[in-house]
Length: 268
Length: 284
Image 1 (cartoon, rainbow over the protein chains, first blue to last red):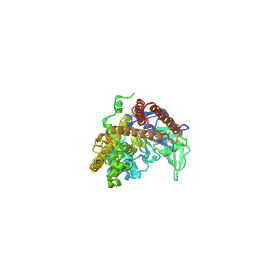
Image 2 (cartoon, each protein chain N blue to C red):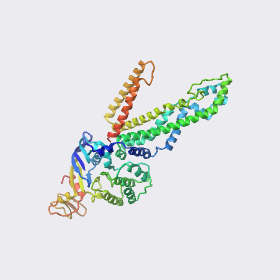
Image 3 (cartoon, chains in turn purple, cyan):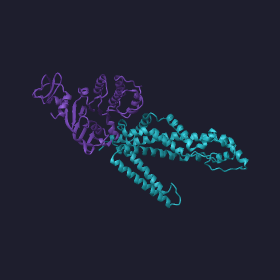
Image 4 (cartoon, rainbow over the protein chains, first blue to last red):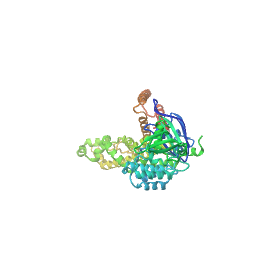
């Protein structure tokens, strides 16, 4: 479980990045962390990973403070940045050298993920394209089996079939002890996996609801015309996408992109 | 309050240390016996031309004195000795070459920076990797030095004795550090007793490099950088003036005077602590 209490962060004092963030993230869930560019998504992930320290407030993961930076803390987490740095070695050597530090690392999962992504374990990392390198790091991240997994733009650079493979692998690697946070702009790639949405806007955590709560409160409806009772709506070429209050228990599928736009336009 | 399991995990384990050393050496892709040996030999040849030019000339037999076989040859041979500074320079240069990437990664690579290793384990792993590089370099330098001295003595010893006898010198006593000394002491001429200090300096040098990288990464192009830079310059100036004054007050300028020992010990401790905290609490 992650407890974030009154978190504040800035790189320059005059430009705050995150202000008064407080929330509790539960185990066994996949969280989607959304926000416009520069809203502090990556910063929040770095704060959670102990790579940077809060200017005020605290973060604890399973009761270990993120600033402790102990080996016990790092055994619990894995942070995959948007553009991870690689080394000139084979994929197998990469697994052998770095996987050994994680006590629950699964060799079988790693090799299976490589196979699914059509990567050869004897290939050199420097011979891989950007997307292939991303696949390697995703395979590695999911194989570490840490209790907290933070993925920054995981589908960025992946081809269409690989996005689907990634979703399958992520679903397979999820357990009831694991908290996964995915920061992304490409919400359509992962929207079916998410249990919970966190939206950062204007330095604050403005939205923190589970998908279940969202669907019990709102319904997402496509109509030929804008609904008059819509909380928020957008015109598409052929249809109008609406969010309405779900007073009649309508069953619908959450349109996260639409919801995100509604939140950032202060309609929700 | 940390649980006992967490406390245990925070302790350094032998297993984690070996993984960490392997990560530094194999992860760098270049730290191995072959590459260190090649770099040492190349540096030995390059530095040899500057530091031990006379010895190289005799090895290649290009000196006109050698062909003339006169008094000047005897003089040159009698004066021939090693500048052992290469024993310090080559291991230090090798530390810079081979540890640059692993040290930079301790600062900037998020994969490395979030590996479950305690700062103490990291510190020791870096130190052991540096000791490995410095030791391999040193052993190779000593072997090459020994080989060259042995070869030159085999080549010219008889000639030198003949030249000395020719002018009536039957029992020359050359200083022990000269290659043709009759009292040749390999421990002395190869600088074996200083080797341990070379390894020690190499480790400190690596730690200083890490701190410098961290400092520039953290503070470059900031106001703090300028202030801290001026402060370092001022402290350095103050310390060097202070040490000069201290040594001027003593009759002999010896390195082992108490003031130097205290300063060295303090500096070593400062370097160790700052490196430890760089690894422990370093933020991006």
